[in-house]
Image (tube, rainbow, N blue to C red; front, side, top):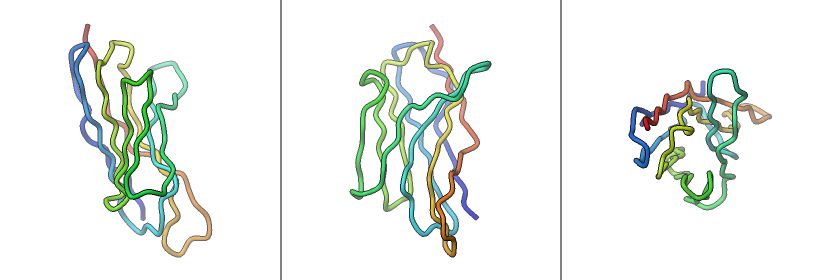
Length: 121
């Protein structure tokens, strides 16, 4: 079985920072894509950003450069560093990964349980 476990959400004031982590574990052969989505009540899930496997570590910017997604393939972990947070960033943040499990022929999409990020004004 494969699991994605997130951590790092919470309450922060506007202008502050938070760092989310998501670790994949279980019967993993390889991970292609890892990244983050977010969702607010009544809205569709929104892409924050994803990274495709390759280098042992890589990163990309998102949300007008305020967020940085990074990945450590050796640890099967993806991070979301969020700086200069705004109240409109308040959402449940979901980790996402496209994983080929041991013994499987096809990759599957996996989601974390979600972690709440609340930014107060």
